[in-house]
Length: 176
Image (tube, rainbow, N blue to C red; front, side, top):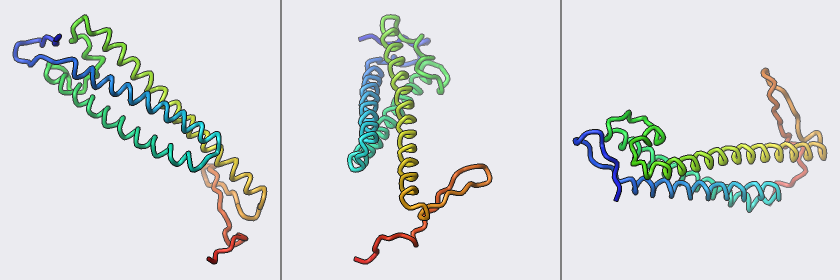
């Protein structure tokens, strides 16, 4: 078993396998989130609201799981930094020089992969948000074209658009 040699004898050795296990789990979970975001995009494009609601819940659950793993890793890294006389806010990348030379490339690679997946997740989230926004806009325009007196667009002082629906003119029966 390889351990990081502390700078002085007062520090406890660090078992890097624990951190590697955390990082691998985090990598798998981010990969799962990317898959769910792809599913979410498919549901948005197929206009399947029931399936979209289901996958949205899965995305929320996965994001919570990822956040827990991230917090756990950050706590682990913070403790590692403190144990080795480094700033508690040091990132894992900042601590890599403390790792044995034989393990450093492996950790660099997994950190790069996690960062790439995080970037991919952010892009997918933004893309899906924009798709949903556009779909809502198209649906509103369609409803307005079918019954123009039902919706009124107004602009606020900073140029934002507000749409008000006139439910009084609705032809839907409210009786059971």
